[in-house]
Image (tube, rainbow, N blue to C red; front, top):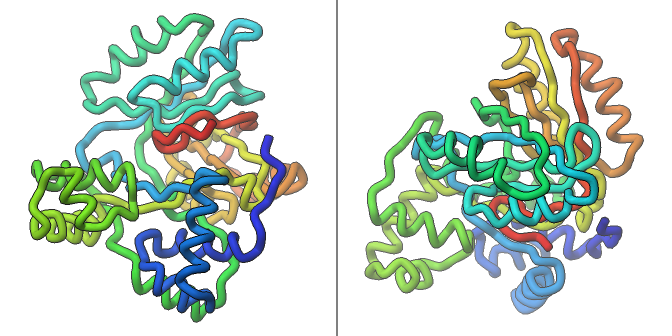
Length: 321
C-alpha cells in the first residue's frame, strides 16, 4: 500500500486540476500564485513519478450501455492472478484486489447492452482461479470520480477555477455522431489534449476538431477528471460498501451518501444490494465512524457489507500498477 503523501504545493496543484482539469497553465499559475514554469515542472513530475493523468470520463448512459459491479471469490492464492486477468479485459473500468466480501471487486462495462450476457456468463467465469462471481447491475450514478476532490483552495481560487469548468453530463442517453465519437476517444485517453492534438489523433481538420471538442465538453458528453492514487493525497484507506435498503429509502440514501465527504462513487444497483458507496478515508477510525454513525443515521439501511481495497490494478480503464 502506498504511504507517501504529496508535498503541499503538489496537493494544491492536484486540487486545482480537480476543479478545472483542462484549464491552461497560465490560469493555474495565476490562481496558485506561482510561475507557469513551476506549474509545468510540477505537472510533469506528477505525471512521471506519480502517474497522474487527466482522462475524459464518458457518462455510461450516453450510449445506453450499463456497467456491472462484480465481486469475485478466487481459489486460495489466486487473487492476484485473477485480478490481473480481469484487468486485461477491455471492459474492465475498475479492478482491485480486496478483503471482506470478496477477493476481487471490479466494474465491467460492456460496449453494448447485448454483450453483457457473454461477458458475465462465459468470458469472466472462464478465467482460471475464479470460484464464484456475483454481479449487480448499475442503475443510476449519483457521484463519480470526476466530482470527488481535495478541499485545499480558498473560496476565491475555487471561483476562478470553477469558471473554467465545462458542462454537466446529460440526464438521459444522447447519441454521438462519428466526429464526436472520434474526439471523445482521444479525450478519453488524454483529457487535456489540445484541439491540434485531437485533430492529429482523430484524423480531423483543425476546425472540426476544435468545434467538436467544445461541443462534447460543453454538453457534458465528456467529463475531464484527474486520476491519481488516493493514498498520495492522504487517503490510504479505500472501501466499497454494499448497502441493502428498504425500497422506499433507496434513492434518498444514495442522494445523502453522495454528499458525504468520502464519496468517490455512489450508485444504485439491481441485485442483493440497493446502493454501492465507494469511499476514501484517512484511516480506520474514519471508516469506523462512517459505518457506525453516518450509516446509522439512515433507518432505511437494513444491512451492509464492506470490501476493503488492498491494491488497485485499473482505475477508469487506466492501469495503475
